[in-house]
Image 1 (cartoon, rainbow, N blue to C red):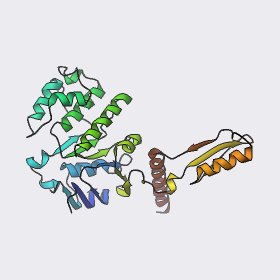
Image 2: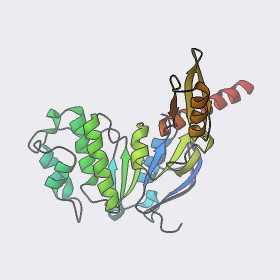
Image 3: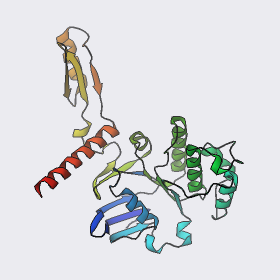
Image 4: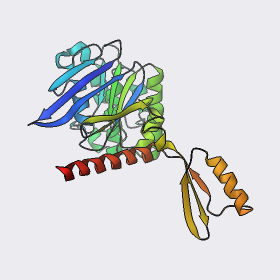
Length: 291
């Protein structure tokens, strides 16, 4: 299993005979940010809950910080930081009281005031959580996840409800945690977020891992070929080419000057991901049609 904080081999989880997670394998390296991507119902949440020790698995081998999550004790749990998609906190105490209370559970917690500032809640220390906006309550969730100075941090849709400025502030915080050596497992539906924060990504669809690798290689080279689009004789034309500059130069020469509507687009991670989702859905429909 090596020294990787997360080691997964042949992970399976079934419910009443239906496979929610179907034999996935991956590692997360020390100090990296790993994004687990996939549409709703793909098996991401089930996988993460198994890694966190909240859900048992049906098969396969799993090691998290050198421990089988099924047998993780308090010392093991103290090394984890978890930011869930939603929180069950009642909100009847203040931000400061909540964080100070949680800090008491850990042997070496972060400074409470510094954490409050880091998640953008400065000035809200004495505000009851129930009085905060949805985005501000989400920041409390993030603060609770990092207060214990975790070795491994799970971020499950962490910026839901954040405005653009708050999201950028959160990205800075994640990069700071990464610089400190924190290993991070991130799930997000914001593909620009994954592209900005993650070193590597795995893509789950239908309970299976369909791709894994460095964030700038997901989808393969063919999916990353630039698209050149221009107007000719009133008609919009386009061509994919690995040499967009050469094509643009040729079009410029043929036109004897500026080419109407010329633009070169390089596929973003979101473009590539959506293409993968569409291809997977088409494959699933085809399988269903032949049954």
